[in-house]
Image (cartoon, rainbow, N blue to C red; front, side, top):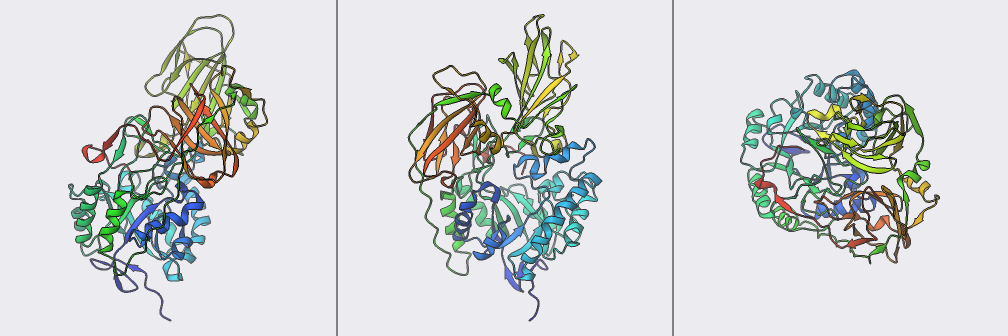
Length: 580
């Protein structure tokens, strides 16, 4: 039997097993979709007329008759904390991410040593669904080290990757994001900037592909929700298809950045991203069909050689009755449930705390405490990453962040405890700030220009184990005025577990846990007004809802059938940098 000929890029069109082939792909991140819904989302992708998936549910994709373009990183961007890189890399003060620096390449080699042997049997030549593998991601927008992309390419080849290799860059990144022998693809949303023409000139007699066709855009806290009109998207996609170009929709289904996993943008101003990653994609955050989906399916059906499957039914959703919060426990009382406390003369950043078997603290909050004996100007010297609530003897006196770096402390000669509850709001996932993403207190803070010393530090990464330990503590009935910050508890009784959205009107800022699972962050600044709660994460009977609230709680937790946003903005009316 002759060897299978995989995806080839030897002429102006792709071939698969020697026959002309057009990639019609969609991105769905397995880490943004509850495992119980993986099959559902992939079936919906296939029923839209797509033939390829760009993510890593490899066996399931193959079972459903989809091809796979694998994008194994190690850096993926994706509006994910640190672009998918582990925070322990930042313990190395000399670390240079995404370069040939030995501290980084040794970590990449360890990662590929574990990953690639699991991938190679699933390649097309071995009967699997993987037809192509991407070399890193948008390196042309970073391009700090001319040896790095060759290193990643060789790291893949030497471990047995033998399918077509490709890179992915926005228009500006095309000129320095390539590597010899690897097909270049382009990322875009509009056709007004000549991106496709630029790619064609760089690679004459090669097939053209838009690896990330941006179906919408991501949101940051405190700014409007981004939308991209369906008719405009469809007209651009039609033009690309009419020109014979292959396409992958980023995102086809965005999903949710559950937990503390959202990234952030920093192109001069730090902006953390929301927990919702709906992206205004063809499938909504909760897996519903949109106008974009239906128009796209209609368009793609005219480019398919065979009838496309019927779309599966959507999951039912319901708005449960409002839930009364019954008990609370203050942050101060919860400290005994934290793993350990650490003491040091100077503040230690999150990643360098001796927590989690010395891998440091990755996510959540760190509480820094020290004693003071006078008042004056407390100056963060811009060493707070990213936001700190400031307390004197547990009384809130102010907030420090990138914009506010000073808080006035009243004069007193008696000993008082200064506490800073510092939140990692999400590490930057794109751009030049990537190397400087240590969180917590990253340097001295001063009181009247004198650096403060002798800190006690509590790691509050709020893992499931911590939330479970909280339950055995003494909680106070909400009839008593709570001391903030605090954890609030209530029970949701469910007969048949069903998808819903959890809403917190008249609350301020914090995190929501359901049966110990971290749903994500809530913040009254919007635009996100509700958190997606998947039905499979609920159980018949009692479900424990715990809300960590920094500043102001209400008496009830509400539910809705649909995701809600504040103000929206059309991405096509904005001048934005290509950030993904």
